[in-house]
Length: 115
Image (cartoon, rainbow, N blue to C red; front, side, top):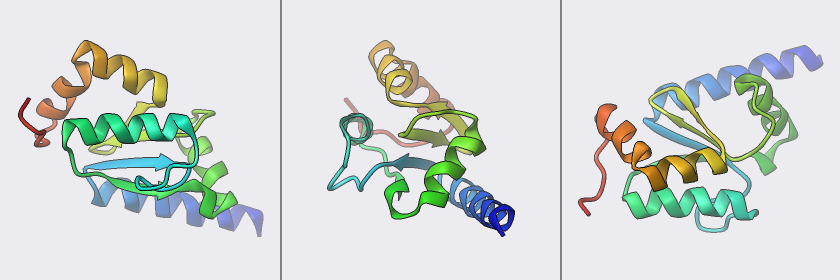
């Protein structure tokens, strides 16, 4: 039974990242983040003015464990852009500060708010 849940979660993660350009797997919601790291990534994405989808991993233990196995990354939040795993809070912060994140979004054809 446990294996089936993982398959369902993997399928649901796959569907989420395939049907949305930007997906943030986070604790809480963009309006009400439940951890500082999730809040920081939401803030960066909001500053860039990009539309993104979010998945609250606190809604389901299967999702919280499933996304870690899926990406082979131990922490949440996790950011995906055009089906590509970008990283967690520290990586997203560094990429934002260096301009790499903006470059990645532009390369992937995602509209960002003009600065």
